[in-house]
Amino acid sequence: MVTEFAKNICGILWEPLPAWYPVAQMNFSIRELQRFKRLLLERKQALLKADETGGQAEQVVELDQARVGRLSRMDAMQAQAMSLETGRLRRLSLVRIDAALLRIEEGDFGECFECCEPINPKRLEADPTATLCIKCAEALE
Image (cartoon, rainbow, N blue to C red):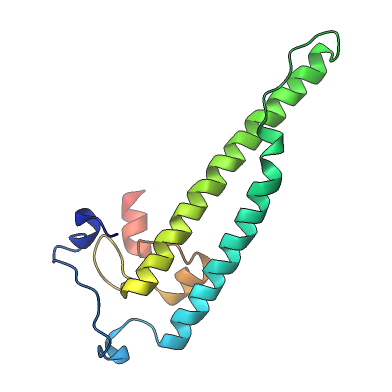
C-alpha cells in the first residue's frame, strides 16, 4: 500500500496508471522495465540467500573463558559486530529493492523524488534502487 507521503512526493496526488496509458509517455519502455525488474529480482534473491547463511555469524558470542581465550573472544565479537552490520545493510537493500519493484508496478520508476525529472538510465543501470537524479543527489551531499 502506498503511503500518503509517497502519493504526494512530487507535489501532486499520485494515481496508478490506467492500463491504456501510452508507454511513450513513460520514462522507459516495457522491455526496459522488465529488464530492471529482472535485475532487481536477481539482486533480491542473492540477498535473501546471503541472509540465510549470515544469520549464524550474528549469534551471541560465548564469554566462557575456560573454552575460549581473550583474543579469540575479541576476534569473535568483532566478527559478530561486522556480521550484524552486514545483515542490517542487507535488510536495508531488500527494502530499497522492494520499493523499486513497487515503483515499477505503479509506473513511477526512474523518476527523481526531489525534482520529479527522469533519472539517467545509466545511473539506474548502476543502482536500480536510486531515487534521486545525479543533480539532486549531489545537492543533498
